[in-house]
Image (cartoon, rainbow, N blue to C red; front, top):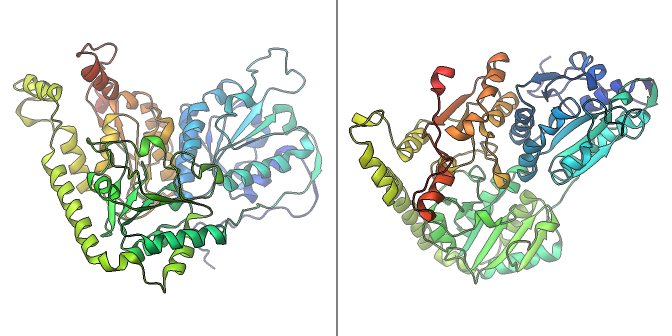
Length: 539
C-alpha cells in the first residue's frame, strides 16, 4: 500500500512509559514530525544523538552553526513545519545567535535545542559553560529550560507548540546531565492553535470601509504565505479589482503572472506598485506589520498614501497599528480573514465596481511602463557609476563586454529561472536590487534575511530549503562580501548531496556601504574594497 508524499508513518509511544530522558526527548521530536535536524555533533547530547537514526531523524552536520540555524530557517519557511537546530553547549550554541535572530524576523517556527553545562558544575566556570538563555531572549518567542529530567518531554513539546502558535523561534535549554537516567512520562501530542478569521465587529467594519472604497489596494505580506492564504487574497483582490503589492521581501505572497500583481514595495521595489498605492483611499494590509523599511520612499517617490484608511489584518494583535495609523485592526488568520471579507462583499454593490475596467487599464499601463524602464535600465546612472564604466573601458577584466552590469545579470537571471524555483537572497545592494526582478507564481519560494539583514544568509538558507523540498530547483544570490561569510557551507551541500546553485556577484566591494561613501563622503573609500580570490576556483 502506498502512502501519501510527506506523510509521517512513524509511531509514537502511547500512555505513560518508563524510558530515559533522551528517549523522551527523541520521542517528542518524532511526535512533532521531525525528520531532519541541522547542527554539529557534540558531547553534550551524545545520548540522544545515538538514537536519532533509529527514530527516523537525520542530523545533517554543517561547517558552522550559524549555517545550521539558517538551514533550519529555510527548511521551516518552505515546509511550513518546524526547522530544528542543535549544537554543543557554549561556543556551538553562541554561534547560532545570528541565524536565530534572522529566523525571528522571518517569523520562522525554528526550535533551537541548546544543551547546557551540567547542573553539578554550573557557576564554577567549567569547560564551555555560559548562560545560554540570555543570548536568545530577544530573538525567541518562548524559552523552555528543562528543570528536571522527568519534565523533558513536557518542555520539548511546549517548545514545538509555541513555535507554531506564535510563528517564531523557541529555545529548548537542557542541562547535559538531564539526558541520562530513568523517568516515567507520557509523550505529549502536538497542540496547534486554530486562529480563526478575527472578530465579527472588526470584520464588519472592514467590509463597510471596502464597500465605500473607490481605489482599494491590497498589501500582501508574509502572513498570507504562512496561512496558505494566497488564493484567498487573490479572490478578495478579484472581487475588488484591487491592485496587489507584495510587502518588502515577500515577493512570493501573490502570483506574479496575475493581472492584479504589481510587485514589491520598499527598498528597490516596484515603481508600478508604488504609483498605484499612492492613489489608494483604502489599503488592506493583509498579514503584514507594514514595517518601516518596507514602506520608505524610493525611486524619488514618497508613495505611502497619507490620507488612506488602513485595514490591517495580523495574527499577532501587537502588530496592529504598531507602525502605521489604522482605521480597523483585525486580529486573525490572513487566509480566513480574507475569505470572511470576500464573503461579506460577495452580494453587495461596491463603490469600486463601476471603475473596475478603468483601474485594470491603469494597472496594466503602470506595469508596462515599469517593465520598459527595467529593460532600459541596464546600469546605474549616478555620476560615480558612469565614471567607473568610463574608467573600465579598455581595461581587463571588463574590456570587450566580457562582463555584464548587475542589472543586466538580474534581468537575464529572471528570464532563466526554472519553473517552481526557490530563491534566497543575501543582504546588500545586489540583493536589494534583485527584488525588482524576482517574480514567483507560488508561495514559499522566496527567502531573504528580512529586518535583521545579516550577511551570510542566502546559501545556508537555500540548502535548508532544498532539504525540505528536494524536488524544487534552489538558487542563492549573494554579493562577494556576503559570500565570503557563507562559502564554507558549499562543503555541507557537497558532503550530503544537496544540489543548490549559488550566483555570486563578484564586484569586489562592500557595495551598500561604498554607496554611502560615494554619496556622503566624497568618494573617500575606507575598508570597503574586497580583493577576492577566484570563487570559481575555490568552488
